[in-house]
Structure formats: structure tokens, C-alpha cells
Length: 469
Image (tube, rainbow, N blue to C red; front, side, top):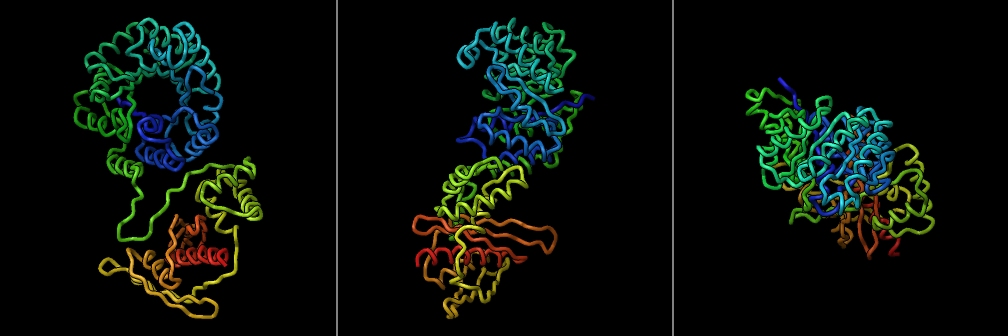
């Protein structure tokens, strides 16, 4: 029985189907999910965003066990940068993308066939000098002139490619037509018998999975899929094919199918544009701050720019404190993201006297009662008590504080994360309040996450009171 390989292209193809690029966090979560499924490879998009894309690739390479493939355009792609971004993976591969149809060569790459063929030879050889595993992907192969396509494949194999992918980028063939196309190419290029042969088929006419089935029946070693529907055959479709026709076709796959449905649903929920919508009964609207990606090489000007993008308007003195703390963190980590930078600002900038102090709090919550909070604060020697009823214990606590101070501040962001591990783990809460067009953040740490949230809110509130006075 032949085990076919499944390579996931979600990270390389999904950005083309949605508005805006994938965030740093989304890329990492997608990679984690795919790694849990035991896919045979994860294909990364070409590096277009410079340092941020490289850092995302490096982070993924360090955290997943699945083989990683860094894509590079034959016409003008930076092979060294792509290789550097994935070289830390357990198994790294360079994937050279070569548009071979006359339309794409002319209008996307501004090259004629002879120039493209020369580029294929040179770039694949260069990639092979850096990396043991090199893939050559013939983009829009089904619309290429057959002689040009076969010459390009032969050149790539001679230059060192040990995997070839034939792409029906436009998705224009029916299953029997695709099987005939594959058979013709294999007959014209005998060297294909010595390398892995994959196919990548667009689902533009809803024939992608059927064409993949025809390719597998015709001897293909693997197919490329996506975990989240984005115009290509999905992992679920190919897994279903193997489940139903595996015995008849004498094929199997190593995909962890028991987790496939759950992981796919999780990724689709995460990527929904309105995934952070709040309940109409709650006043806890969580802001969607931009993801950032900084490292120890960034100067204070770049860090201050990002701090302003996150909504903070700090003095020069506070900016200097934030940058000093940022450098300490950045020297210990590969990167500093949004959460770390928010926490740095909350803990170092605008440290003020405590106008409001927490005396006590009592929280009641459960699955059969409405959450309530009874909070006692002190302000200028006076004890002030507030009672809140909300959609959950933290919402109730924040409403109780608002009752005490007699004012509602917009909750710009609210984050919770663990600081230590175990049953007695410390929890860290970050609260960002907006007042007068400015953002004020507070941080709280406790083994009680509700207590940490209350402390974070009071910390931000004290900064607002200090500024207003």
C-alpha cells in the first residue's frame, strides 16, 4: 500500500483569499494546528514583508516538528533570505516557484521562455548549494507550452531538484484531462521517475479534489491541500478520499484524521473577521490592536512609533523607560510582540501614586447564578463600596468599580495570560482604558485571575486620575 504525502498550503495561499495579510499570531496558530495533524509538510509564503516575514518563519521553524518549505520566486526571489528563515527547522526545504505559461511569464515576470529557462537552471542550482531538499514548482503548468514545461522540469532536476510539483493554477482541467496531462509529462521527462512528484490543483470549477484523485491514481507521490477553504482542495476532502477509496486505490496517508475536524474548525473560527464580537449584554469590548514584531536591533525611534500605533501618548521620559525595558526583554527573546510591548508600557510608563486602593472584593459566580461583584475601595481616606452584576465575574467587577467612581471608561483592550505553570500558577492581566483620546494601561499579577484583573483596572484608573488632576 502506497502512503501518499499531504503538504498544506494554508500559510501560502490563504492571504490571497482574505483582506490583509495574516498576522504574526495567526501564522503561528495555523502552524501549530497543522503540526498537530501530522501533515507531511507546511508550505510558507514568499517573504514579502521583509524582517517580519523572516521572523515569523524562524519562529515557526523553531516550534513545529513538521517539515517546512520556504517558497521563492525564480524571477527575483531572495533565496538566501528564504533559506535563512527556515534553516532552523527539523527538515527545511526551498520551493522554487516558476510561472511557465506565456501569460504569466510575460506579464508577471517580464521574461520570455529562454530567459525563464535560464533562470530555472541558475536559481535551482543556487538553492541546491544551500539546501539538501529543493522543490521545483511549475506554476500554471497546464497552460504552458508543453516543450517549455518539459525543458524547465528537466533543467530543474539536473540542477538538483528532488521534488517537482505540477500546478493547475487556473483549475481548468477535468479529472481525465489532468490524468492525461500528467501521463504525457511523465512520458516526456523520464527523469521524473527519480524524484518525488506532487500536484497542486485549483478548485475553481470544484474539480480540485477529483483531479488530485486522478493524479494519485496516475502515480503522483503527494498532493497539496489547505486546512481552511481558500480555493484549493482541503485536507478534509483528501482524507475522506483515502478513507472511502483507500483500499480500492491501495493508498493510505499519515494524517491524524481524528483531530482534523476540530483543528479545521478552530482555525476557521480564529480567522473569522468578526471573531472578537462581544455579547450585547456585556460592556467588555476587547480592542483589536495591531500585531507588532520587534527585536533587539530596533532603535528607540521604531519602538516609540509602534507604541504610538498601539494608542499610547507617552512623554520622552516614559518613552526612554519603555525602550530600556524593551531592550532587556528583546535580548532574552527572538522577538517582542504586541502583548509583551503592552505589558512593558503598563509596568514602566507613567507610574503614579495610588489614588484608589483595593480594600476588599467578594465575587459570586456560577453556572446557575448571575455573576455579582462587591468591591470596597479607598480614596483619600474614604471607603467606597460598589456592587456590579455582569456577564461573568470580571465584567461584574469592572461594573462595580465604575459604580464607585461614577464614570464609564472605554475598555480598549483586555488580556489574560499565565506567568508560571502548575495549579498555583500566577496570572497576569492587562487592562487598557481610553480617556480623552488617550490610552492608559494597567497590569495586575495574582494567583487569582479575577484579582489580577481588578488590580490591572485600578492601575490604569489611577493613571487617568493622575493625568486629569
